[in-house]
Amino acid sequence: MVEYANYSTDVEANFGGFVSLGFRFRTHNVTWDLSGIRPLESTGGFLFFPLLKATFLID
Image (cartoon, rainbow, N blue to C red; front, side, top):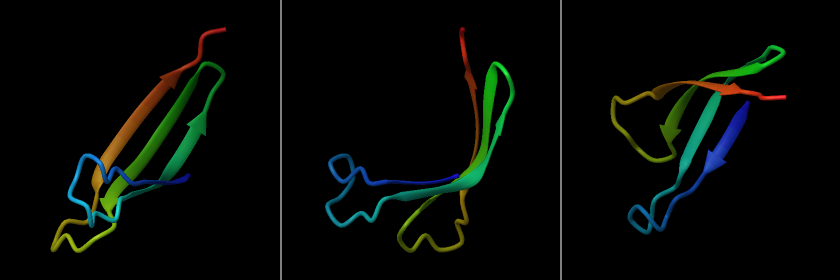
């Protein structure tokens, strides 16, 4: 899973956006995303912000 988002209206005008890299696991009723989110600009020693997301599917 790779996603890119740019929220330039909420942040300063020269903001490069975010990139999210991770894995998606699917079961019958739940989808799990295990990933890391990182800004696309110089962040010093900051590597990524961890993200664990579960989406429950209702039939």
